[in-house]
Length: 151
Image (cartoon, rainbow, N blue to C red; front, top):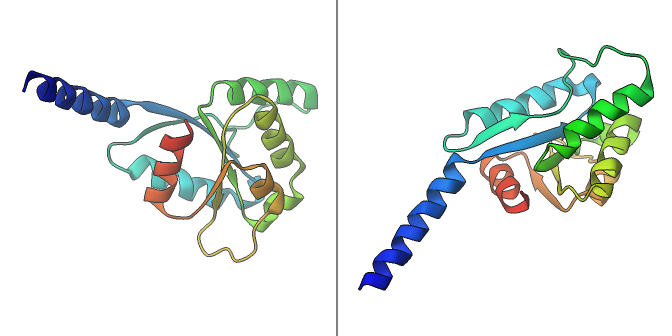
């Protein structure tokens, strides 16, 4: 009887840990399609019992430099701080040199990569999907479950 109670307590503690954990997420995206980035951020922020901190560089808060080496050093630091890297797998991902670099750099760092196919997309990026450890469609529960699984 005492063993059952101890197991139940550990199970409750594990559930509380999962619910309270803050996930550091870097979303690799194209600034030309920032609406996908903002939509994904909104889905994750509004999801109850899921806490996320974003590490990517959004268009409204750019790295103020034209020096590619400096920009890459800032992005590398942000990738290193991330638990999971999400690649927006819209077709445009195949044409973004920065997205490819971010995902290849994350892969080299051993970071798990989640490809998310944006809402309504029928054509997707093979560049993103080929680098991903897992691919999901635009569904809050699928995305959250995949982040928890990969982190």
